[in-house]
Image (cartoon, rainbow, N blue to C red; front, side, top):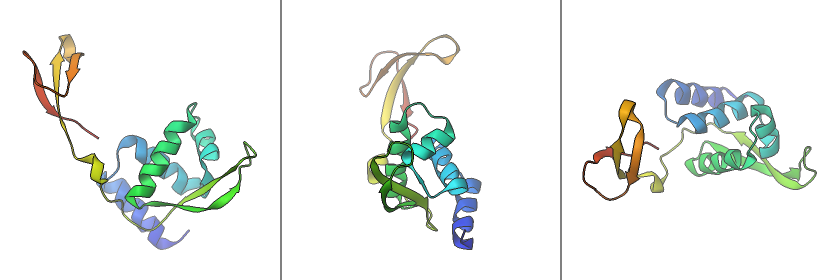
Length: 129
């Protein structure tokens, strides 16, 4: 592993740059990569591989993971992408501007109603990404 990749990982971990779901995918790929999405999902014991694929695509678009090459997946036997971390710090995706949402909260903070538009009795929140 290159020192620059370790520096990037430590910076991402210490500064909380990534959401929890993205960091779980990133850290598992950092520790065991390069891996295919199937291998990563299996390592993480994730039942829905699609969630891992979605996070990998987001992390690629943010610039902190990359597609190394296409290979035959050791799990599925199909042609797939081999992923790995790089030495870059992620950048915020353009589509990730926090949006305002409106919630009606019940007892103990449970959400009774969720909307993008204001309604009577709603609390205004910025959505967390």
